[in-house]
Image 1 (cartoon, rainbow, N blue to C red):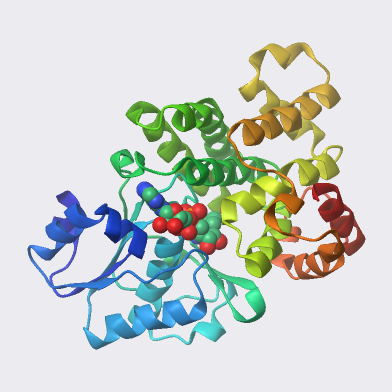
Image 2 (tube, rainbow, N blue to C red; image 1 turned 90 degrees about the horizontal axis):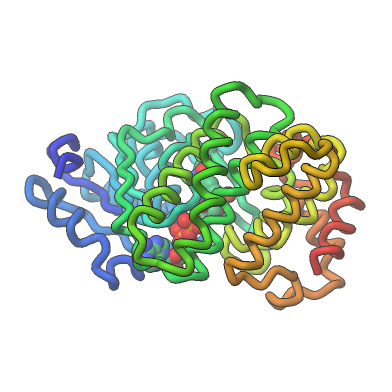
Length: 361
Ligand SMILES: NC(=O)c1ccc[n+]([C@@H]2O[C@H](COP(=O)([O-])OP(=O)(O)OC[C@H]3O[C@@H](n4cnc5c(N)ncnc54)[C@H](O)[C@@H]3O)[C@@H](O)[C@H]2O)c1
Ligand SMILES: [Fe+2]
């Protein structure tokens, strides 16, 4: 395996989750890497990984004096691996590097192998960790970009339908929010976002209906990767800002929380982002090219909502044990996501957020 040849000799911290080891998905990678060096298996990463989990991974790596870090898994193991590699290499203090651009040290060699399509974390400089009180904090810094990303679609063939759906919608939201990002949108992020949206929107229902379709799975994995490249340049915004409190407080999967808020936040943005939504609509439906921008923008929102619905996800907050009365608390939490809210095409105030949660209920 080419990846095993690229890693330095010396012990390797292998980060994954217990479900993936149980399924045997990580075996070929563990064996190939382990042929030339000791492998320190850390497979206790949970969905939306906590700071304690990250610190435990770092302890495991430090006591074995590892010289590289590999993750095989979804966004959760990859995000733990990225920060573990960085903190083991740099010796920085985690609580001093939350935010953008504060991690400037040297990390250990790092390879990421996604098993969902997906967060695109294998392409991004971001790691998201759930901290005290369920608040999701992120480190966003260039040293977190991996040395190697391996897109191996065979790993995604057995993804359960609800994970395929949720992670696929997450990737679609990355593409859409990057394309409309208020601050750092640029021609490169636009090109990645457009191609990502094309690949993802035309293959999502195929991989749900025919999970073993390798060509469609490959298109999804590439789409998620390109969406990751897009939002590494032009960061995500309001959908993610309002999704995070649902994940942090209710432990719902990240992609599902994006799906729950998608339609409502896009409707809120529809006027401010009208021309950009109109452009994206033509990717989903080339026949709409002759229509005015307002109707194309509305069409995009409708088409994305249809995709989320047809992917089998239950799309109301009430379907997931959330009470209507929680809207004010969720809105207050969402306001803490200032790093994301500043990228939204228009302002989302606390009372807007409350109204959007109520609409999503
Ligand atoms: N770093 C970034 O740029 C970035 C971007 C978006 C989201 N995130 C973070 O990523 C995390 C979510 O990652 P995710 O959506 O990939 O899910 P995940 O890694 O949490 O995995 C979700 C579930 O799917 C299972 N699974 C994963 N791959 C599988 C496979 N091939 N076959 C069978 N089961 C499989 C896992 O065992 C787990 O139970 C969140 O913490 C989110 O905040 C990070
Ligand atoms: Fe995301």
